[in-house]
Amino acid sequence: MIQKVQITIDGKTIELPTMEAKEGTNVIDVRGLIAEGMFTYDPGFLSTASCDSAITYIDGDAGVLLYRGYEIEQLADNSNHLEVCSLLLNGELPSETELQTFVASIKEKQTIDSKFQQIFNGFTQGAHPMAMVGSAISGLAALFHEEIDITNADSRMTTAHRLIAMIPTLAAMAYKHGRGESFVEPDASLGYAENFLNMCFGETGKPSTISRTISSAMDKIFILHADHEQNASTSTVRMSGSTDCNPYAAISAGVSALWGPAHGGANEAVLDMLNEIGDVSRVEEYVNKAKDKNDPFKLMGFGHRVYKNFDPRAKVMEASCHAVFEELGVKDDPLLEIAKRLETIAREDDYFIERKLYPNIDFYSGITLKAIGIPTELFTVIFTLGRMPGWISHWNEMLSAPYKIARPRQLYLGEHQREYVGINNR
Image (cartoon, one colour):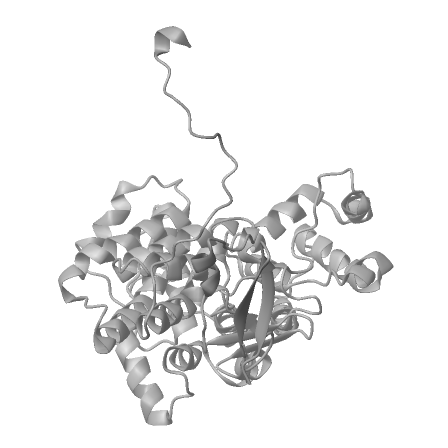
């Protein structure tokens, strides 16, 4: 049932309709306010629904994350990343035949044109891999420019498959270039996560040595990061895509947004924090610094802007993290010992419990990637691999229905109109 909300502006009462959500909070449709010469003020869009979507639902208070209605825990325990990609793109879990067709489509698109690979030669070995990956994705706009028709559903799906297929290859190429090593071509006989790891750490012509535990942990990382509703990078992709720009350009914009330490770079910041603490004997000292309002130090990887309970992804990642530790026999690693001590404190200290500052996915994914041996600068790139199906699903969803170019308003607080003064009279 559609209800109406009344507001009074300068003595005039205006009725605004509400829109009912299938799950979560209903919204007030404020689009009619502009006709009255008013609009809302909401920095950071904390109270604003910028779109409607049927892809992902988050209940931060209850610690619930659903992809197309399926709990993230069930998907992480029973599914795999490519099946989740198909789910996000198409809205339903695929049949066995549909999944085989989807996987085959992804595998046939993994290889990067040899001429296009030269794009990496324009970067120094010290360049951050996110800079290389973002530029390479943007470069795909030139490679496939004549084949793209964003008004055609089949063309959009081909683009989606290409991006999901090529992002592991591009990411591995960025890693190899940074190390001054030759590229390893994708291997269609390997699973998605194992293939990525083999391209990073394997050698051309040699069989993969990636263990099932390690590839499974990486696959879970991809699943857990596949989508997260209207976050900063997803909103960036939607906003860029609303201009009808090339989809590879829109995704590249999302990569840039994800790079920020407050977003995709958070797991990288966890390792930076552990390095700053330096030794397990100093953990309590730094916990006290975090509690001190006058101290700028912050504990990274604890709490979440959306989740006011446990991050459901963290529960899954915690189990995977400990499985990796057990397989690798990780012992006497100073940073991991610091992480374990912080985890214990967060679960026992009243300060953390009262504020619900539980370890989040960035905490566990960061130390898991560290244990696997992945360099810190590659962490956000791996996040990019995971988030790709979410970005492209939101882009496709937006273009599949009527939409408007994004054009946020502002509260202007600058000068009143004034006359130009010549430089000799200033």
